[in-house]
Image 1: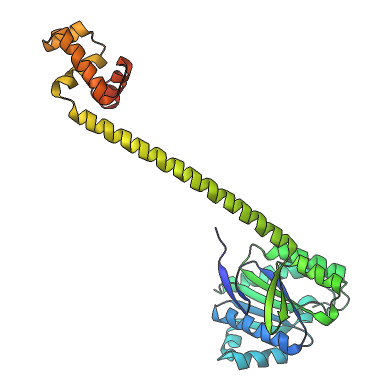
Image 2: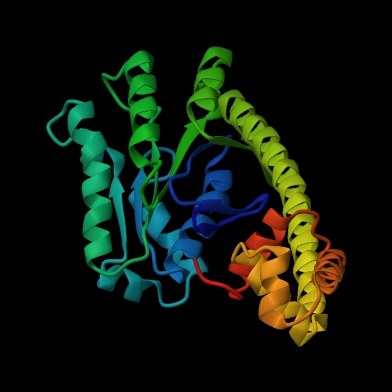
Length: 305
């Protein structure tokens, strides 16, 4: 079954299925606002719970101001609890330490709470690169665990990274870990798929093409067989309808194992006439042996076992 597609709200990335975990590289505060505001606006309009974890260069106050300017009656969404905008340290470092075993289940717990409140699902974002006391290795491991944790849930998660803080190695790791990566070019956000996801899509496409070809082949064979059976049934039906009452009597007695002499005596006709009727019946029904005549009579209810 195909996954339900959700409107993302980002130019260049129209729809994506639940369970998507993608990332974005940004260069300026304005670029970050231009990406995240439409993203959350789409979530609010599609009755999703939204969680925005803020950090420099875009703090909680900036995020709320941007949303108020872009979303009509934004305060109503806030009052209803459909969107939460909180500092990322409050989510990741409530006790001062980053605990993967607490943070990853926390996402699922937050989603389940949203679902019990009647929301369609949950979308979130967070800027993880500026977490204090967290090594890049630990963070990359966390992203991989999170990627597997949300893939079967009604959640969209957009991770943000400042280009100025990422070297070639970090960028490569980020693209590899996430399903999609967004990069801004000429004021348009472009989506880049990870190599692993590309391979998976290619393999699935090949498998789908093979299955479709196999189904087409089997469908043709099935339709041909059905047509042949229909023609055969129609032919037999026409032949059966063309049998005279005398021919039916002869066929019934032949099927019961009576000899030519016995059939002649029972029907008060000559043995030669019996043989004539039998040959005519076989020709009309396209049968060639007495055994085939018997099988035909039984399957068509002319005699009982």
